Amino acid sequence: MELRIDRQALVPVVQQIVDGLAGWIRQDAVQPGTRLPSVRQLARQNLLSQSSVNEACERLVAQGLLASRHGSSFFVAPPLSPVHEPTDQNRQPDALADGGESAQRELKLGCGGLPESWRESDDLGYAIRQVTRTDMAGLFNYSTPLGLPALREQLSRRLKQFSIEADKNLILTTTGATHGLDLIVRTLLPPGSCVVVESPGYSNLFDLLKLHKIDMIELPRTPRGPDVDALQDLLAMHRPTALFVNSACHNPTGSSLAPAVAQRLLQLTKEHAVLVIEDDAYGDFQSSARTRLAALDPDVVYVGSFSKTLSSSLRVGFVVAGPSIIARLSEVKGITSMGGSRFCESVLACLLANGAYRKLVQRQRQRLGADMGVLLQVLEDADWEVFGKPAGGLFIWARPPLCDYAGVQRLAKRFGVQLSSRTAFSPSGADSDWLRINVAYARDPRAQAFFRATALDRPRVS
Ligand SMILES: Cc1ncc(COP(=O)(O)O)c(C=O)c1O
Image: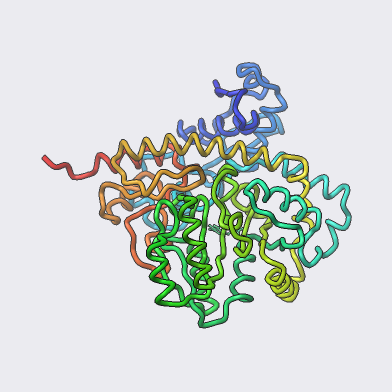
């Protein structure tokens, strides 16, 4: 079996073996119970070390794609394994229509994070072992009110790459960006006040604002950032308290803030004394040269996260703001959570200090960039309308040529593909024909077949 290992690639060899074997199992519809060539054979044929092949096979066992017998031979696992993806691309629509198990096995083309196969556990495992071995306080104690000083030190240094000057005492760690947004909303926004949110935008933010009884005013998102002309009118008309902006690799459109838009936005919000909250949860997927509002104005409240790149399970995020805001947020953080997880913060601090996180995001950017280029071409060939060509990140926002959502949905089901929600990205829950496409899922043969079929199924003008 040829695994096509690229030794120049930034993706580690073990991960490439995992991808190669997983691709073989999924794409070739290999029967459960099929025995893999021996570790020794695979290693010899592909000029690899046996330990790398063995490690890759063990990871696939952990993912449920392989089973191991006697610790040395590996077999394709039975299909009902919970994390095993379907291999049959010709399944009938009815077989998929019942939600439940079949929906679980569909390709989540519109989902908001990286697939499990992209996640890399070696460096994370190393950092966890380091903290376990060397940092007893990290295992057992509460963190400090602002968060672990060593982590805030690293964050302060890292933010300089985005030209954001943030002293470590102006950084508050949070349990993911979600916790940061919650602290901001409950502490800084009085119930009944109104705020401006982007449309389309991040659905969980809309739910959070509703939960806190904050009214939302919709601001259209353009491929260059929020529509600043519309913002000018909205600010004059509604006198909102705050504006939420997802500046880089925007969810769901993939677009990023243009410098001129950022300048104008800050000028307008200053004139109207509006608090700007910049959510940069996907920012690390993009190179540091891009525009950040917090780099241009120290009054911007900035929210970051490591969920999308490193691990959504660690639950580490952070907020950067001025001293009085940080003091208020920190007090509420203490009251509502007693602080973050010192263990997770120590693990992240270790990965930032030893350079592993920096290399991880470099690999992710390179891989996403390559996949983004391929996907944009596929969409163009299939005549999809693309909102704007994203400069990096996870998402493309696009509309199929067949503008009948039910038809597109049926087609997706036929190929085992689950599409993004039609209503979730609108603050008012309005229907949309646009779909969020996650670049990291789009190379899957099921997605490719679906895209091709949308072009073929289109009614032709004679
Ligand atoms: C724009 C945006 N902000 C914040 C979050 C939440 O991130 P975290 O997992 O760090 O809470 C998400 C998650 O999807 C997101 O899309």
